[in-house]
Length: 251
Image 1: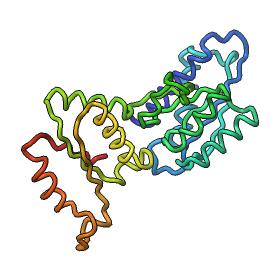
Image 2 (image 1 turned 90 degrees about the horizontal axis):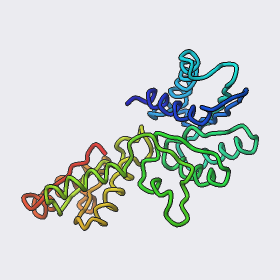
Image 3 (image 1 turned 90 degrees about the vertical axis):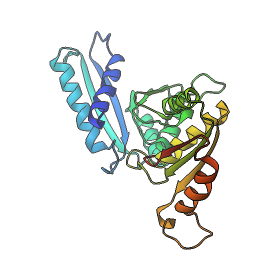
Image 4 (image 1 turned 30 degrees about the vertical axis):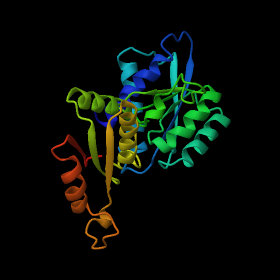
């Protein structure tokens, strides 16, 4: 699913909040996404999709132009944990938000969602990949105002564990690129493998991981990681033939 189609999917969910409108209503949407177009979900890609979705809803008769208006503002999340919450504070302080669209990057999303619980402002995102975002009812749940509409590492972990258990594989080596898929969110692969490790530990599946660092791959310094040495000494001796190697180079 493209970033544009996911943005349109999010808009449909936003419209659910105003489906029973009987008088003129102004819906204030605050979009917090990175300005940097290297990211899959950037302001330049998603804001036009939201605007097009609104016009489509009018043309299809889902919404009445005379009853429902939208006010869209946006801010740069920087895909970090500082700019995003500061932008959210500004929207709330200025009373210019009814619903947050984004952030998508996990590090940006976490602080915004924690505060949204106290602001009583819902947050909808195709991001929020980390497993922790699924905790909405346990103890002092922090993410009660969050709705995730895309795939996440919870589903990835559950699917992987089911596959391993079905095949009776219980000794796993995970290989991943620390810089892989950073166009989606920073540390995407690190977060994915962390979720897998946590899930496998709880399921009693023995696991190890090897993180590929490109600046060290061709090093002759034996004190640094060597991918060939790891494959020969760890996978070749301890894992190959015994059980299963899961190659997560894409993550």
